[in-house]
Image 1 (spheres, rainbow, N blue to C red):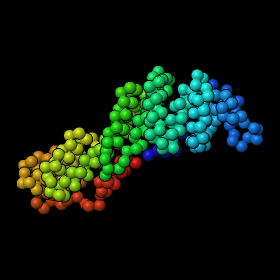
Image 2: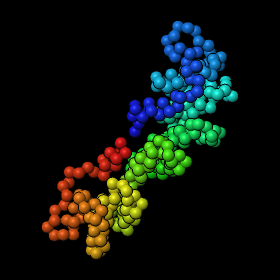
Image 3: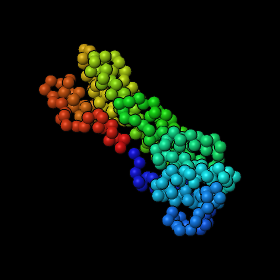
Image 4: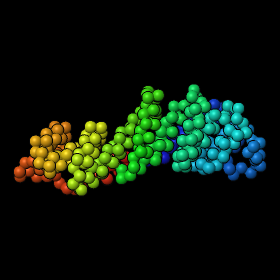
Length: 281
């Protein structure tokens, strides 16, 4: 879900730490330097931090963590130690070690609630949950947790760029949950378990009405009502579908069920899993 551009932008939000330019003047930033380097424990916090940043730029995340953790361990009261905690968490995030990143960010948020980069810490924690969202065929507890974390970013920092991105990801996560409900609903419908299927499809219509799954949910309800002999309920549901999505293929399918001689939509539109995948990626 991440692009190279996004990685660069996220990293640039942190690289403006104070005195970094001064630190770089003490370290040449090149692993190929022929000058002997002091053991990590003997290096200044500035040079260690700068080395960690350079390792990040080279995508050497394990090495970056080593530098940042050394800053924390050897220079816990320096001005660099706090930023190093955040950068270490960022390094874990970039190497897909989300559990470690979340743990580090939890500690950072608890210990440094007034830090200048606290909004980013909340945002990075939300991303660490969001990146773990699984496909719509599996349990969606992780999606719900990710949505809660994204919502916290929105609530705490509503005017920030982080909140704007969190809102976009909330929409994608909501679509993901709706896809899960549709998968279960279609399974129940195929087994003739109409009451259970109706519950799933209604949830999509009522709780996820802004997602692209709503038209199909209304069509599936129309199908089930007709199967149960509830013709008027089917007509009302199809009417809602037609009113809100007049040009949608699912309305054409519903119309064909109710009107003799009407033709259903062409059957070459993407399947539900492909549409759910495309909506997220």
